[in-house]
Amino acid sequence: MSRPSALRIFVKTVIARAYPRTVGHARNWSWVVIEIVLPLIGTVAMVYVYRALRAPAEYTGFVVLGGTLLAFWQNIVFDMAGNFIWERGGSNLELFTVAPTTFTAILLGMALGGIFYTAQRAAAVLLVTSLLFQVHYRPAGIAPAVGLLALTLLALYALGMLLASLFLFFGRSAWHALDGMQEPVYFLSGFYFPVHSLGAYVAGAASIIPLTLGLDAIRQVLLPGTPVFLAPAWEAGLIALQIPAYLLSAQWALRMMERLARRDARLSMRWV
Image 1 (spheres, rainbow, N blue to C red):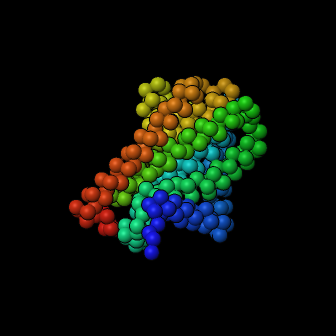
Image 2: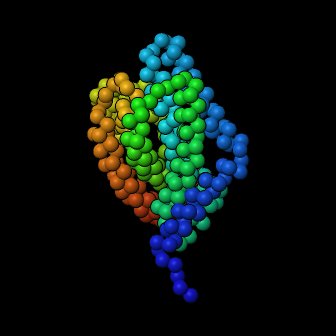
Image 3: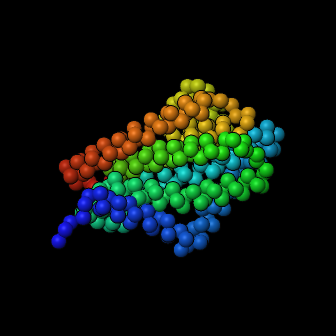
């Protein structure tokens, strides 16, 4: 009896982990409504705040694009970074451990599935708010914006793979730390205002988060009058460098986690 190749196992694992995330949401329409309507309310509220302050019209576009990409960051934190912890609580992590596959394939499948259904939520927020508030985009910037979005998502989900491995090993302490950082991340990434407003030093430090650079670059190519932090080409280059950096860091963290888990017997402990 022939054994499947390592590549075949890797690919089938990716598909198996992506499948429930792409199909599961379609089977429960209440999830779709909740994940679209609630973020939409938050984005609309911020638009009305700027209108009440009589802010320039381009700020409406800043809020709309920020609210669109906010969906991906929330998916990274709640559905990817913390997923291994939830799987451990549901006694599935032991099955992942003994399965003839790798944690990398499992995380990649989670990422692909997460991108699929989160893109639906983001598209709904973008479409509804753009039509509702009549946001005008630069037509020539649509193609570059799509490329920048793809780069940003690759870097963002590579960061999510790193966080997932760290969360699994450090458990609740890491979860509480990142939960407390949610609002600071919203602020530092400039979800509802141009990151240029933070100043060079703060914005430069915040660039470790891929969304900071990606969102700023997308705004510059789509919305005329966006204050410039860095040129979009420079921001795209920095994001491209973050992709292998986070992927290699995730691989290192996974190996470290497995090594320390074997030594300390902490991998399958549920309350650490």
